[in-house]
Image 1 (cartoon, rainbow, N blue to C red):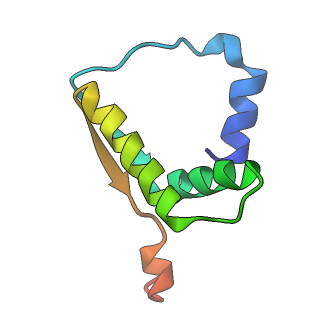
Image 2 (cartoon, rainbow, N blue to C red):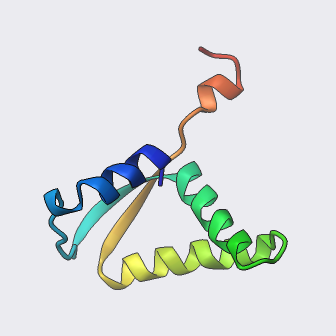
Length: 85
């Protein structure tokens, strides 16, 4: 999650209503999800274990699919990486 979005949730938490998703699609910015998984793993005090990162990523997908939520991952920045901007 981006820092600005986290701050928005913290400061304006009463403006957001949680609801359960089922039988739908959810779009994720893949790099942000990857960074969040890595950040949480490092918070445990260990070095980055890529096998654990992959396992956690798989667990996220399995949790979503368990609710019949089809994840769609968007990879931003590829144009910039290839100098297409």
